[in-house]
Each structure stands twice: as C-alpha cells, then as structure tokens.
Picture: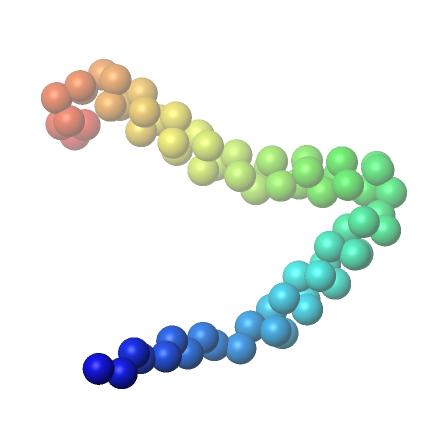
Length: 67
C-alpha cells in the first residue's frame, strides 16, 4: 500500500508580507504602537459588548433558553 503525499499550498507570499508587517511595526515609535492598540480596542469593543450581553442573557436564563 502506497502512502499518499500531502500537498500544501504555497504560502511564502503570506509569510513574506507578515514579516514585512512585523518589521514595519518594530520601526514605529512607542506612541504610535500605543495608538495602534487603542484603535484596535475601539474596533473590538462592539464584539466585547455583544459577548458580555450573551453571557448576561445566559446567566439570566440558565436553562439555555435565552429568548
């Protein structure tokens, strides 16, 4: 019985872009990095609020019926 060979897609372009992005971020000042994190928090905030609402609804209806 012959073992099948696994063929993986070429992701070298993705890895190259990732490395370039890391170098770009590393070159930024501390203040710029803080601003990036604040912007990220603002983008994530609606998802965090929705998660908290789901958790609160689950606590209010522990039987699993959150409607």
